[in-house]
Length: 433
Image (tube, rainbow, N blue to C red; front, side, top):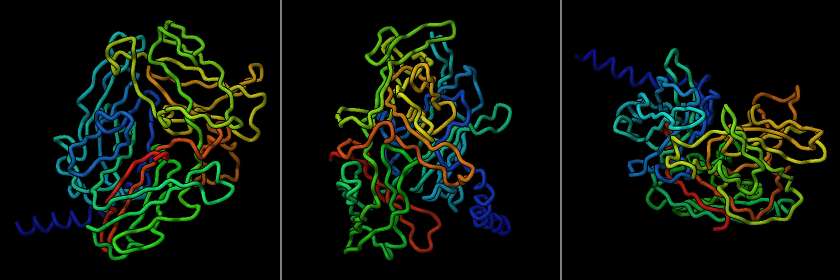
């Protein structure tokens, strides 16, 4: 019996040291869809469709993941959750240290589409659930695998579990740099930690700031600038700064019976629906106009049928961006939540000289979508693999400091001797607070 206890203890000690080192090379560190038949992925707080996947440790809120499989069959999908450090690499914790229950289980909640031209299978997952309950705060990766024939990763999503120990007071300012005064938004904030004693804030505390829920342009590893009694000031000049951009363009596809104002035509074919949009034009030279948007997000909804998830149709949607000449040295992509905030070849727009416009397409489920046009420098031989540029929406859309954006601040805490990064506070707010 004593030997058995010794081997169990040895396993607990060695597991966090060995497993991450083996898995980190292939471990996905970002949101990504690996199979083109996986569509309409939504990951949010249950019942709050435009929220970001951030929940309180031990709280009542749960996360809901949903997606469609356009193959229309059933696959042996299962999920796995992995605790990560603040840089989205697997932490040094063993699985039984951060989950009460199982870190890996099958997806059992699925339904087939009903009366749609394009058949699909709709899957859903809720976390935490009776099989998987979190016991530690921090960053987590949710991985969806297909084990029908072989273990294939099909989907990866980040989420955050917060154990609130501090309060955050944010402030939106005009950029301190004169050149960014009219185009950017600067964020200062104060972290109050009356209930938490922090020995060395400059080494133990870091902040991450997200704009509109995007991780591709997030500002990370931000240390405090000043330390006061029971408070930390993050007052960096020209560091926590984002281009304001413009309010996102929008597309209403909730009905294929009625044509919305920016839709040119809707055609029903033997294979499904073909939607042609009206020509968009660049907005970089236009003055700022305010209107309500979804900050780049989208909502699945149909007014043609009663069930949004199972009766909404899919369509091939064609986008047009009218410009007299191609952007020199730049590629143009569709961009936003509808592209998973990712630059992919399928969303690259080709310039048609006869139309005098860029033309691109996307397969979309009925709903209401925000989108933008992003530019990316043409690939060059000297571009380093780890230095891929961030998509730029200001070239086509323009940027103004008045634009309403959603920001999220996450506070990470790793005291001396700890083996993982805690998330001890979070706050979301708009730039017009």
